[in-house]
Amino acid sequence: MASPEREAVAATAIVEDVLRMHGEGLGAGGGVGQVLVMGRNIDMAWRKAEVAAVRRNEAASWLRRTVGVVCAKNLAEEPSEEEFRVGLRNGIILCNAVNKIQPGTVPKGGQGVRVVDCVLALKSFAETKQLGKQSLFKHGGIVKPSMSAKCSVRKNEPFMKAMTRSHSAELLRDGVSLEQTLGLDCFLEPAETITSDSIRMLVQTILSDKKPEEVPLLVESLLSKVIHEFERRMANQNDLVKYTVDPNDSSSLSKTESSDTPQEMEATSTSDHGKMDEEDHESVTNHVKTDEEDNSSVTNNEKMDDEDHNSVGSTGDVSAAVLVNGDSVAKDIQAKADIHFELQKKQIQDMKSNLCTVKSGIEQFKLQYSEDLAKLGNHLRTISHAASGYHKVLEENRKLYNQIQDLRGNIRVYCRVRPFLPGKVSSSSSVAGIEDRTITLMTSSKQGKDARKSFTFNRVFGPLATQAEIFVDMQPLVRSVLDGYNICIFAYGQTGSGKTFTMSGPKILTEEGLGVNYRALNDLFDIQAQRRDTFCYEISVQMMEIYNEQVRDLLHSGPNKKYPLLLN
Ligand SMILES: Nc1ncnc2c1ncn2[C@@H]1O[C@H](COP(=O)(O)OP(=O)(O)OP(=O)(O)O)[C@@H](O)[C@H]1O
Image 1 (cartoon, rainbow, N blue to C red):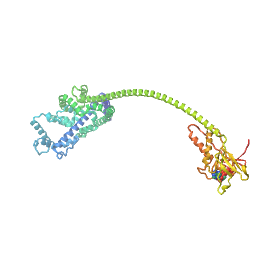
Image 2 (tube, rainbow, N blue to C red):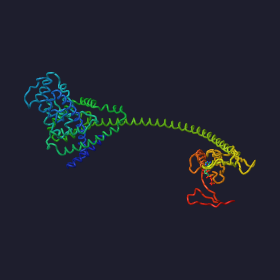
Image 3 (cartoon, rainbow, N blue to C red):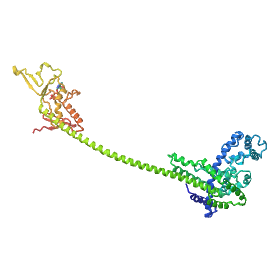
Image 4 (cartoon, rainbow, N blue to C red):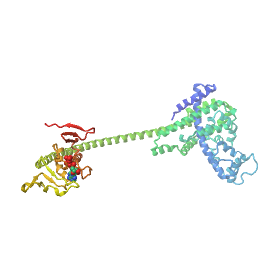
């Protein structure tokens, strides 16, 4: 919140601006004093208007309830100052209210004297009840600190004087304060409840009864500027308060704001008012007295303002009270800022302690991590050792496997007898008998022992042997290829004996009909896939045909490519 000095400087700038516009410059020193008073007065006036509105609404509500809605149709539930005044002006509502309380107090009939009748009735009623003015007008504000009246008069100078001049003396005689007349009060409210509407309402109220010529252009413009500046400052202040008070700390918020409640403010204000009641009342009277003498009250007010500024709390001066209130609000904000600062300090300390905890946690975690890492390394070494042992065992197995293949023979010769082709007579077969490893052939042209001859092979396959049975004996050799052994499988025999059938398969290929070539390649690809995590194999295929002493590349895509057959 801006300090009073800063407010004064800002307000000075406004006034000087206005005066410059109107070609009426003020002296630097005088300007500052005047603006300071004006700023305080606006602040106070705005507070008064706020409280006055609440009180007015309460009064209107009570009147409406007392006289009934029909009778109170001209009085809104929350009337403006003007509406309130107009609504009660003819006195009908007031008279009805008095009669409701004490039937027959106000005689019916008559138009122009109802307000007077009502007042007189109240007077009579009060005297009858033998109650003092103060208790009777408990809510009427008569015995409210007359400081308010003083405040109102001084605040709205110079046009305020004109307004109060014609009424004040009479009203004071009747026990009605100036503040009641104007609907103003000097209760101080917390900054949070301040609204710019109150100021507008106040200004409108003050100016509503005035003729245009009574309101100097200078004052009008000055007020407009001051209101604008005030609104801007209030917006800044509200932002600052929002920022200062931690919204998450409801306890501190409620705690710091508790003293700002309207009730407590009113209580405080009332207490202060009580202290100054007598002085204020006297001050109002004096002020009214001096009204006639001091038409140019600005000078007088400046003097008083200087005095007020120097004697806050000792003379009961309203401007000083406003200044004190400004300081109080500033102190409140400062207190909130201090609380907020302390909270943040505590939070930082908490965060520091949390940081220490996290740091120690991280250190512990690091230690644990390195221990786990060491354990993992040991496990890995064990596994690696086992793996190397496994590889050794694997290598040994491979060697043993290939040794078995060697023992079975590096060169193996198999005999396969194809079945008779369709249309051929099976009785003409020369095969006399087939055993596991022996085949016996019979030659019809020879007699005796010479007619039968037996041949021994690694194995003999009869006409019913399938392609799969043929490959079972070749498969171990194919696997030796992947262990680095060179192998060769070929078919030999006369034309039409079934070499192509055995190595490749029939013309129309089926899965069962696949020959040794296809099955060997499939086996190689399967083993390659099985060992892909351990070994990387490169497989390439060539397919050559040797026919009529010509070598042909069967996989060449172009025209038949022939190679010469070279014999070393
Ligand atoms: N085990 C078998 N089962 C059924 N049919 C067979 C068998 N072996 C060969 N044949 C058939 O015999 C015929 C001749 O076989 P294949 O062509 O394989 O002989 P080949 O030895 O390759 O002849 P060439 O040397 O003239 O090329 C084919 O029709 C083939 O389908």
